[in-house]
Length: 77
Picture 1: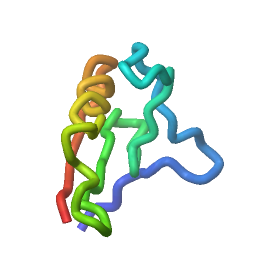
Picture 2: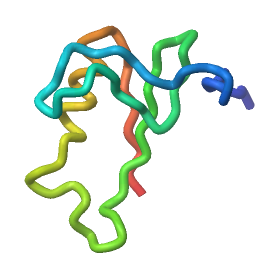
Picture 3: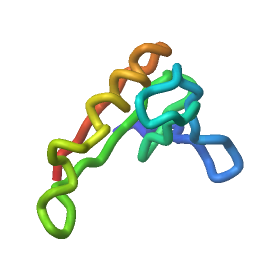
């Protein structure tokens, strides 16, 4: 079994992206493997089941991360 070298609390887990529709210059993946530029997202429907509805920015966030060279891995729970 291999362990991923995840970003530590001492490291910045933000990724500078091109400005998306929400206006931020940084995306914050749930987990980040900086050495491999892998962004891991844990997605769930949320407590009320609507977290990924029509106003969700998740697909755009993934696209913004990909546009700066990150590989995005999504795990749906």
